[in-house]
Image (cartoon, rainbow, N blue to C red):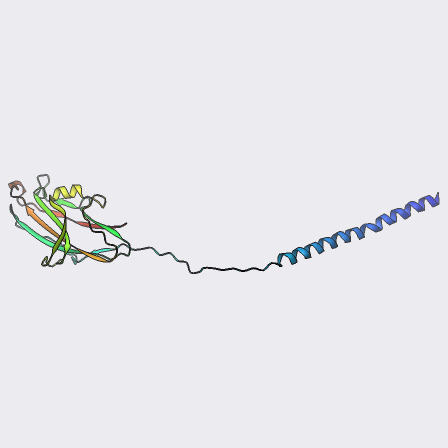
Length: 210
């Protein structure tokens, strides 16, 4: 009986003593694999190229005129048949190509009379684009096209009301000037009911990039 027990004990001892060696072998294998993987990840040649200083800048659309904050017209004492002209230079200073239109924005025409008929119902306006002349004088003005041809001021204010419906053919591609000549005439048929009235208009130029 004692021999049999001793034999079992020896076998059990051998199995237990073999386990640490097996664990050590697995750990050593994992370490060796990790070392191989680490070397493999740094084994390739590499190269890069780059393109720097990329920038984006927006263009500009700017519009001004030479009126020095003065009205083109301050006409008084009008009577049927009265007429007059005035020029104004509009300057485009933007970097983007644009179209420029002329209009009277809603509310841009006011009347001293409480109800029609208004003076502006009988005041015709002609507007020409061209070159030469300036806000001080139309001397030397040469027209290139007529954008509003003898249209009553009231009709202009109700028809040319924004950029989409505005008048004009000017389409500058960069900094440029355009001279506009305005000519008014009070119809010979203007009735006595518009005597003593004053109508006031604000003309607006708008440039939209194309």
